[in-house]
Image (cartoon, rainbow, N blue to C red):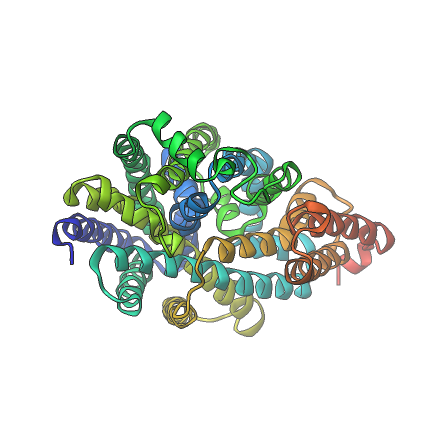
Length: 479
């Protein structure tokens, strides 16, 4: 067990718990519990908004799975990963002020709240809630696995013990403070990620003898590693371009990211977050994926590619510094885990229980249920993560695609097209999710494209076509 590397991580976790306990005092007021616990009172400034978007999006997939995929595929994966640069820009530009204004008017606490008020349909709410729960379980499992892999590599503990430590830490933290704790610690975590990835990249380049030497070693092993096409030539221009739909434009439809566009304080905060978030995401993603590729000549033959991040940190830096730098991926993973936990919890409590089971539930009951469900969800994900795949990035990207296929048009068209209605929204979600699962299972790259592209196209056609063919009359709206 590497004690020197563990001490900085432990100190970091203590800091995070301290922030969670402090933030917990804000969720004591009965009238504002839901708004505070799930949205931080809609009071985020520009810097914190940018960092919470970055840290939530930059998850175990980016910091553990991403470098692992880059280790296997080479510089082609770095090029593919940079399609994520515009993530924060697209989310805040497309949703922007209109989404914040509309969700405030609807008094929406979750994305499903918005869909419920916009479409006035129980089926829209239920299909949305089921989609969130199904696909986010996959995403949460990826985060749990990533955190456990990191602790496993750092401590020498077996995978199950590492998974238990990680899960316990996150559950205690997120059930105490809610969204405000998540947002504030995201600001800390995003800053750690920004600095930590730069330090690790520089140390990796020095250990590899400089960039020209690393490129030479990669070329000698496999010339494809330094081309845009990947180690086995599968990263075609069509596939890489279509990937932009998944991790660029489509991110608008991810509930865990979209909810951030509800939570900022004012227009100035949004504009500042737009600039800061775009710069930080681009910087961090480039650094992380380059580290994965550049680690290959230094640590050849790693059996589980997801362990490349902690292993290269321990290889090229003093243990104490590696511990500080590894707080960055741990920060990203914890951030995403707690955000996803809150999102699924809010879907069950706010969108299903309060809407259709017990609308007049007391404050104490809602609070107790929110905290209990958050804890139970964590335990379920823990069980799902006990048998991990070799590369967690595919779990996370599967979840991304499913959520985008379900929500992209009901959200965007619901904001900007008045003729869109509940029939179009239901058709869009059913077509999008159904076609995505079918494509991902049996036709993973139709026409050379990522499996999310055609479902997004056909769900758009379904939304517009059904909305026009089955319009909602004023009389039906009043029922």
